[in-house]
Image 1 (cartoon, rainbow, N blue to C red):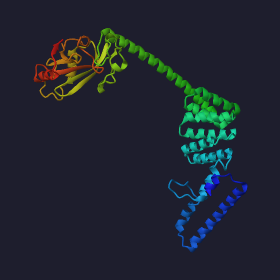
Image 2 (image 1 turned 120 degrees about the horizontal axis):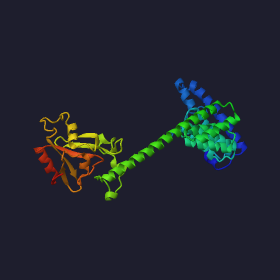
Image 3 (image 1 turned 45 degrees about the vertical axis):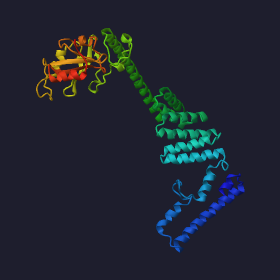
Image 4 (image 1 turned 90 degrees about the vertical axis):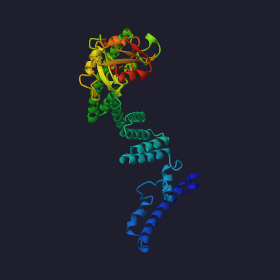
Length: 397
């Protein structure tokens, strides 16, 4: 019957005939339940189960794979078939579905239902306004504020005096920091209803949020300007000193010194990039001191370039290294090296030199955003093995 119905338009007489048939089937179904219950010994605990299978009493829609009652298919056709309903009727049917989902907080399903109603192509502006406004509400509750605002504005297009849609638009505008639009919506609401408490409250809240946001934006802009100024001063200081970097792109003195280049790649140093001191005259460096014998490193996060290597060693060995069982690592008993990876050699450092002097040497390159040194006991087997493992000539600086 359904296939035949889909191929032709139904007359009023056929509609009445179908309605009467549905009524008759319902009566027969109920009568059948009574007969089964008493004549066939139908268990009491299955009464509800059989009732739930009937389209008039089922509490949930059929799921994929379920046997569908022919009457359910007929009811679906009556409700959703465009040949059985006008565009307005279809739109209202989907609106009812959406309202049902809204009531049960199934907001995404509600969005789908209201969307189908809009797609029914009804030309009734009041129906369209309600569909867009209701979909706006569904979007709002799942925090799709942009979609909710767009739908609320569409509802106002079809019905300019729609108070609910204007209020929803005001709420969405506030959530999206569209302060002027929120104020406009609230003021328009108050023009119609001077006692609109929610609009008054939101208007005040919106003004306070706008002031706070603008204040924060000014602070952020000022801080960004200060950061840029500090970076430019730092870059100028590095360029004036002609400091070289392992991972600097080709270009020599004209190569770009970026913030990424200056960011330390060693985890303990990553929050302490090179910077100028408060006077803006002295570079302060992060540094790593590697002990090849023990395969671990010490880190000093802020070393002024005026410090000597002796100062650094005094700080490093203020307390004995936990793994130094022979007390070999102490000031005056170690040599410090740096590595020039560009030409493949190691340089022994004169410990009386300041860091700025060491960094200025021709063979020194900043590595991974930090100063990198190797510390070994003086004239020891460890030192000889370190030099041999490098397989590079040793250069004295």
